Every structure is written in structure tokens, then in C-alpha cells.
Length: 192
Ligand code: MN
Image (cartoon, rainbow, N blue to C red):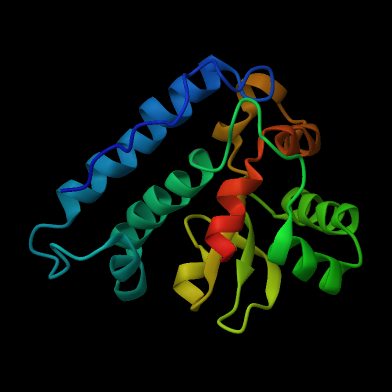
């Protein structure tokens, strides 16, 4: 049985970037539904007792979609902080970003541009290959780097349920605002 992972902050902690109302629906309704759905789908699937990552690698259809959305949201909600200690990455991650994009600002521009141009619902990811090479990838629906043999590092949710109550159709404004709450300490640990 999978459980709804507790948020590492209060539901109003990320305002005004993400409102308490958005968080209460996004976490308390959308993510909860993915958890409930997967728990209903798993019995008899042959995947009982497997980790989310294993289920994602081995499944398709509704099981993949619900397992993917649980992993994606756990990573998404787990990477924010009301007052991040740093507004940019440091150490090995900063060095790799600089090597591949030239600057952190250039990386941010490409990340947001790929979030804006993703058609419909999905996720934009920073992912790492086994050799440490980074890439920014667009994943439709519930797809994620794990399904492609890559390590998930950072993600922005571009499903409308992530921003519509606060930003309506202004996806670009929402994505740019998210930089203010990314906890780079968490992101660096994922890359390490
Ligand atoms: Mn979402």
C-alpha cells in the first residue's frame, strides 16, 4: 500500500508563489487520488510490493500513469521551501550546469521555455544520465526520467491543476515564480 507522503511545510508556506488553496487541491485531492487509484489497481497486477520506481519501469496504462504521478508529485512537492537557503545551485551541480549551459541563467531560460512549449499536460525535468550528463526533457502526462533510465533531479509540473487557481492561463509567470521556492540543497542531494 502506498501512502500520501506528508508535505515538508504548511499548506500556506509557499504563498504567494503557490497558494494554500492550490496546494490543498493539488496535494489533498489530485495527489491523493493517484495514491488511492494505484492502491486499487495493484492487487492482481503482479507488481504488489514493488517500489514506485520498479512499477514505473515495468508497467503501462493506468498503473504507469498513477505510479508515475505519485513519484512525480513526491519529487515536486519535496523540492520546495518557503525560504530556500540558496537561490542557485552550488558545488558539483553548479559546475555541471555551467559546463553544459554556460550559466545558471541560460539553464533557467531553457528550462522555463521547455515548460512553456510542452503541449497540454506534463512535466519538464532536469535529468541526469549515469555519467552525470544533464538534460532538460519534456514528459507528457505522467512520464518521467525513471522510465527512460535517467535520474530525476528537478521538475516543474505544467498540468493546469498546478497553477490555474493562482495564475489562470499564465503558465510562464507561474514557472518563473517557482525559482523563488526551489530548495537547491534538496536538488543537489538528488544529483550527488
Ligand atoms: Mn500535479
